[in-house]
Image (tube, rainbow, N blue to C red; front, side, top):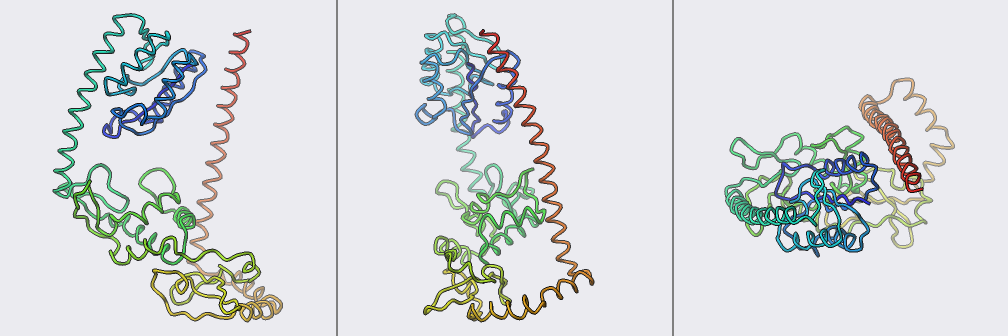
Amino acid sequence: MLAIYIRKSRDRKKEKSLKEQRLLGQEFALDREMQYRFYDEGIISGQKKKEQRPQFAKLLKAVENKEISGVFIWDSSRIARNEIAWHTFADLLRETGTLLYDNGVENDFSDENTYLFYTIKAGMDAHFARITAKKIQTVLRRNASEGIPHGLTPYGYTTDDKGKWKIHAREAETVKTIFDLYQKGYGYIRIAKHLNEMGIETRYDIEWAPATIRYMIYNKTYSGRAKHNELELEVPAIIPKDSHDKLIESIGKRYKKPGPKSKKYILNEVMFCAQCGTRYTVSQRNRHSYYRCLSEVNRGVPKCGSKAVRAWAIDRLVFEKILLGQELYEQAKKTYQTGGNIEQKKILNKKQTYHLGKQEQWKKETMRNHELYVKIGDMGIYMAEKKG
């Protein structure tokens, strides 16, 4: 069994990505017809102790129990950048006879020269890591005080010619849309779905996700309050500070979804307020059910002043006049004959394009999964025959 250990440093941007390291290790194992197991640490500093790196701790345990015969790493510095952790790992390799494949090159630590070489290299890596960390912290503090962001700026921001914070005009409009939709009662999932269907691009070749929306709603950088450690940064605001604070305060106090009884109402959660555009929901008051605008129900958001209406009265009107009276059918027929609303057609076309694209993507992913399944299955049969 080959262990493939994967880690990416927080401070080193130009090293191979986690995906590249995974593919390199997998390719190495398949070429040598070896069974393999991933130990993916993710993005974490190599200076941390083994207790703070759970995958590294599992790897040490597997080596100690002789569950694996070799360890593949893209570079020896991926294992550890402090002397104690490295010596623990190296001694285990020597005691158990486990081989180290450093970027595909086989190393046997029972050989004294190999052990000495990597011991010296580990000391140099650790020294380099400590010196670099001090330099980076000094530069980061200086940049922060001068209004220069560290690393990638959040979505909605970019940098000017001097490297300082600057609002990205197109992305800022999307940020405002996200906050506006959330204030109107949209949830994280619904906002992400809306942005994807409308073809609004992210910075990278990925889709909007609910977790991204949640991060943005909570991120006070958008109201001009970024920090580096305890140092306040000067950042231009996209969202007003007061409204952002009220919105964050309202999270957790938002109106709960109606229970099973409210599902019997025809227009529950499909009717929208003409004043503010927020959806209506069913609210119970004095033993009666009402359709009410969510802005009137939610705490911490501006009220639009819309009045509540008796749910049974509206539902009766819809049922008798529209459904039984065939008004809905006549309206649909008229809309079809006249071509309907042009803007609505554009929105529907965008949604259709998005969903058709997703369908093609799923087909391709299914084919790749089938090919990989067959390849791994063939290797398993080969290994079984070889053992037999």
